[in-house]
Structures are given as structure tokens and as C-alpha cells.
Image (cartoon, rainbow, N blue to C red; front, side, top):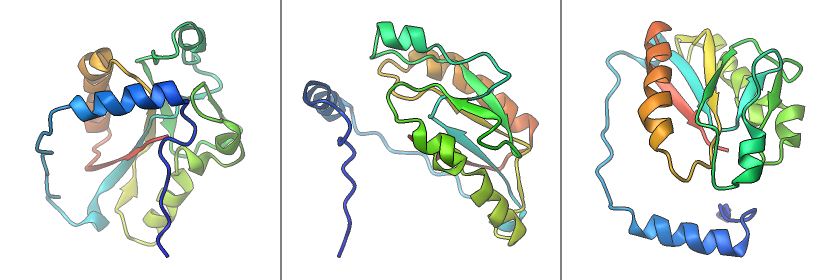
Length: 168
């Protein structure tokens, strides 16, 4: 038996209809594929989560802006050290239930799973830090034009070969 995930389960009917219409209007583009230049067992791997996760010592994501305009998401990002735990971080995303991430960070940023892959030799090493931004960004221009290049710069600085996007 195949289990099917309902991606629209937590979205109200009006938003669901609008988003499905927008998605249908997006032009189909070829997704660029970049093969690995070395075996995965030699690669440094980082995580990028759309869960609006921040260290408790960092500036929080802008929830007030999100409350005032539920179609907006804070386009900034946060750096999360690889050894962070649930006690170190907070989830600032109003479009997701943060309960699960507060109980088990791996729901939103699977650092322990990545550490297991490193320990087993499946990957070379885990990046020293991972990254999070606030997903549910209907107009992604600022995220793509400003935030993404900054994240890419940090990934290059950390010598990252592979990035896993963790959507929430």
C-alpha cells in the first residue's frame, strides 16, 4: 500500500485555491543537475531548513510582520551550529506547528540523522553550521536576490559540497 502525503492538509480552502492557481501558472523550467565531483563519502554536507529556526541567543525571525501579513515571510536567515539541540533553538514560523520541532529538532533540521550518516561513513562530514530561513514566502524576490547569495557565500566558506533542503 502506498501512502500519499496531503501537502495541503493544513492550508485553508481559499489559500489552497489561490496557491494551486499560482503554481499552475508557473512556467515549467528545466532543473539544472550538477553531478558530484567526488564520492558522497568524501563530501561535506549542510542542511538548509525553511522552518525559521534560530538560536535562542540570536535575533528572532519577524513574527509580527508575518502576523500583519500572513503572505509574507521574513527573508533573513540564521546560522545554526551542527551540535545544536532543542534547548538551543526556537522555532519562529507561524505557518507551522512548532511543537514537533521543539520536541525533536530533527523534524525541522535533522542534525542527528546527518551525524549518523557521518559516523557510518555515508558522508564525509557534516558542515560546522547549518542554515534556516522562514519559508512560506509568496514573493521570494528578496530571499532569492539578497539572502540566497549570502547563504551560498557561507556554504562556500564552510567548504560544503552538498546541501539538503529541509522544507517545512
